[in-house]
Length: 137
Image 1 (cartoon, rainbow, N blue to C red):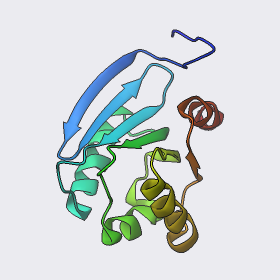
Image 2: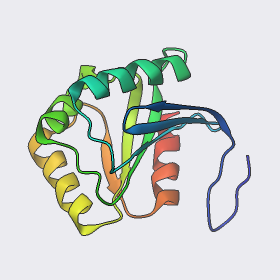
Image 3: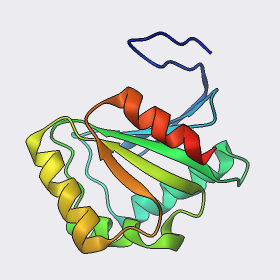
Image 4: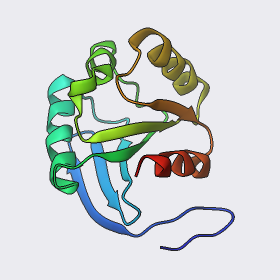
């Protein structure tokens, strides 16, 4: 693993595309999911994501780093579903990188209204998110 003061990096061991999501298993044990803004997704997409995450982690729990394109806005029903503890049994914790005001607002609503069933935090800094996620390895 390569680490510097400016950016915590890890080797990508595996990558899979699942509809709107690109999912990567990092060498530090963190799973990184990026949501693309040009592809709509729904609860069935999230179920497919969960299956693929399970395959990447060999059905073991792992911390989940989530990034989104600026225009990737999760629909209300997907946020309600994803907040359920059993919606993704492979995620031990979730860190969302909120790079826009819109994502910060939606993220705060998600935390307060949906009350995720896993430890979940919002971050503006990817390195801070990774440091926090590593406490769940």
